[in-house]
Amino acid sequence: MNRTARATLTVLTACIAAAAASTPALAAGVPVEVPLDGVESALHVDAPRLSTEAPIPMPGTPVGPQYSADHVLPQRALPQLPLSSELPATDAKVPLPQLLATEDVDRLGLTTEGSDVRTLTPGASVNPPLTGPRAHRFGLPEVAAPQAAFGAPDVQAQPGADLAVG
Image (tube, rainbow, N blue to C red; front, side, top):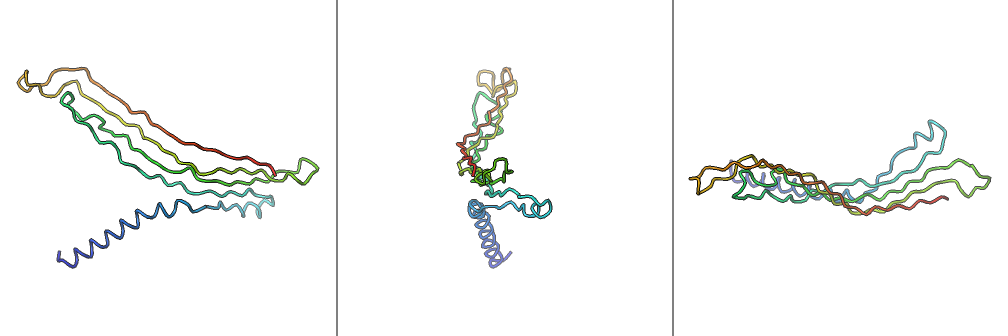
């Protein structure tokens, strides 16, 4: 491959990587209107209005495996992966039937604000029934109890909502 082709390939790869990295940041704050206009015309009823944003999970850096002289396999062989995102802001307005004689109450509104969400996927660690090589046994392993450990998943968020009748 000549020098010009390599340079072109490098520039193209850099452009694709930059576009892929900036796409979630651009799409994070774009509201999505759920189209329910067809329901109104087909059923001749007032359809609810729903507007929300698309959540985009962003993976973090997992903690790598830890090596120990006492274990044959590395600890955290299946690492826990942190993910962060945002619960989207949502606005919903649902029409209410006229139960009362007044015209004041005709819609039920639900509004939520966006809030950060941090999660941690489950992880696993396993150790076979042998230890690492021992110097006092001329490099042979010793027999040990097998071990298995699981990292619990974790979710942290502070959601909130406002419900209004009007």
